[in-house]
Length: 542
Image (tube, rainbow, N blue to C red; front, side, top):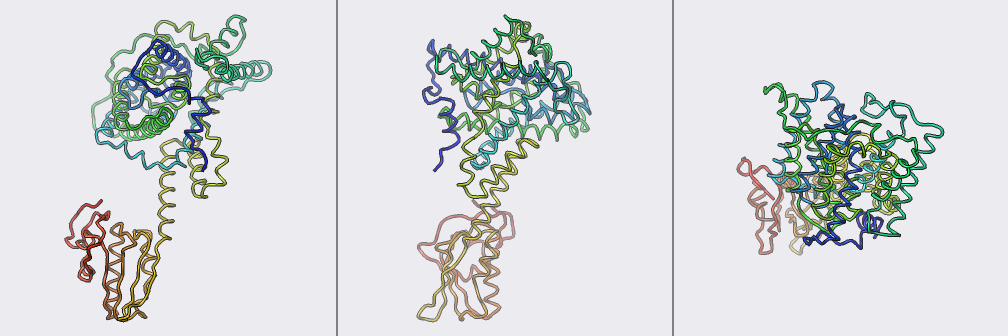
């Protein structure tokens, strides 16, 4: 079998020699966590500013979101080491809302988004992330890697010409000639430093070394390249409590609720998938419901402090994990470093060349993309290969939530179709002249037609026995098919008996139920049904 995506990712990032999360905060661990947090904070700055531009809001709105969401999820999130902040997946949804109704409606929407996410955590809806198949996960990371790569291309625009197109994508003029060559050279140098640093020393995170060395070269030699300050000034004060200035009316709710619902879904899907990815790398499990509550509380608070909301960031999470961050301290320090940048160190941070940060993100792209998925495409079932490609394309063309939903639906339909083909029967006649049908394979909504085609009431003898010992009656459609079969034999003037049906089938079948034979070895599973044939009232099944 091919190696799993997560095992290959861990090997690529040389994580096998880094211990999992620990409660013992040694001096060495403290240094590692703080340096990882600093590296993440540096990478958060241009991302938050860029996503604020995409959403059509002031850069500080994105920076405050990165700080507040990152801080709260680091403290109470479901996975230590995971980084959250303002993301492009949410920003592209916010464009129309901000354009049509203004930023105050965005703040109100973020508050409602957070409340919905808290409710999802309270009702433990996060557990449904388990139904996401592995091919969908592969498509998710591949698509997200491409999205991260495309987002960095905006930094290759001439400073002062970058503007937002009608689709929310960066516009402007591309660099050419020597400026482009210098930019590419510095990006390549950053990537080379990140690749080489672990081979020389692990005392400092490789991304931080790449940023620091390239920044020093640019500042000392006065290299004329775009810097963080060319995007926008990140200078600001502490975020202030602010109640969104929107009318508290039903009309306002009608405006913000659809956006809040979509944002909540996208945020939770991206966060829970990142939770699983980071959990596999760090050897941790669980925490889905806790992460839902943490994301919800973070967004609710952010909406009241002038932030654009956010969710988990796979790119920054991978930077943190690669840099050795395993505890909540790394995420906490990243948020606090970001606040320090905003309040105190803006002039210094604004001198960092964008090429260094682009180089870091390009290395994240290389590490995130599941390269082995290209090799296994010829080995896995065609349906799984289709899902990988479909989810990847949909993630890039639309958004993550739509991609995951499409991937799960296609996988579920393929599973149902495959299992529907498994229904068949072996038949023989007893010495007494009765014909026995031994049903094999699951009987459910997709296999009912195949089930009915197994029988020939017109030519069968006067006594027929249907044995379900090797089958499973799964849902209401299956019960209906059994009822219809019994009616066919009854209409033909023949006797039919049903064996080895579960007790709940006995209770739910009406006319056919009178024909069942009780056995000590009847199965005890329960069918999934929401309607009782006998009573005609709503019931429950498992």
